[in-house]
Image (tube, rainbow, N blue to C red):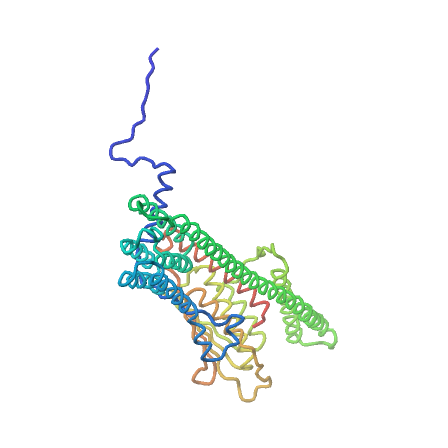
Length: 474
């Protein structure tokens, strides 16, 4: 029996997988570079304090302006304390004390405009004044440098974040141990330990403050979202209540209309056929309105409502719509130009509803007038134009005022399909509605399937608008 051993080798030039420890160190070094080296001396001025607090809001005009500069004044005062420690905190006098005071003040003031750069300047200033101290001074931070560095660490941590504070503390510890181990011989005392303990406590307090502030912001944002959702839910509940009340009121009156229209011919002896046909049409329209009203109410009430299987109307159903309108007394003509073809469902439904709404507006606002419907099939889409003339001077019926929701609904449908619409008074005193609904060319439908998906979404939206139109009644 022969055994064959296969050894998996890494192809030449291929990158070897990194260990988790290596990735951890690499991420840490990347964070260090991002926090303390990238744009270290970037200009980031300290903003003024908000004056909407419980104390500052009671101040006057000029005092209120001065109160906004409180953080800057506190930093400057801390810099003054560090400078005085540099002047008087060492037995060495003369020029060295003046140098130590200035090198303690400058890094603190720099935190107001260049916070990360102030940290590096504080380290450099601390090292620069080492030669001016005596064997009896604290080491490696001289009196003024110790106060200045603590202030710089605290201010920069407040202005940046916990990760930057951790890196600054680690570099401070590295600097202290390095100087103490190489140049600390012959000095009476070392303040590396106290510096690290005090700075750690200060940075820990700042970190807790950062965490608490972030938590408060998140809670506030969540409360805002919750309040918005609660308001939206309340609005939906109110709309549902209104829809139910609307159904109760309208359904009652429409039922009465349907019953009276059915019974009216029997109250007249030998009614003419025209009268019987008119009452039959009234009853059919009332029953159809009740059916549509119940369907729309079902959409509002049921969360798991599914649309009925009945097809939505299209341009092929315009003949029935115009015939129904003519029975009400409106003289309407239809003109079709171009090569008639099947269009997307959303376009067909929107065009049908636009014509329906425009003719309904004609019946309400211009009773007795004539209307004309023009349908144009063009290469890039569908054109629809509905024009009605002015109402005759001796019309028996008066125009009915409307709320203007019909035109708004038309515009919503047109904008959903990225179309164009104009509506306004005609020159002869009538009204004109012109709409163009773009339709993608046939080759574009094979465009990764996205065109069909977008059209389906628009069709669904138009179906929802169709249900809303039935509920609003324009």
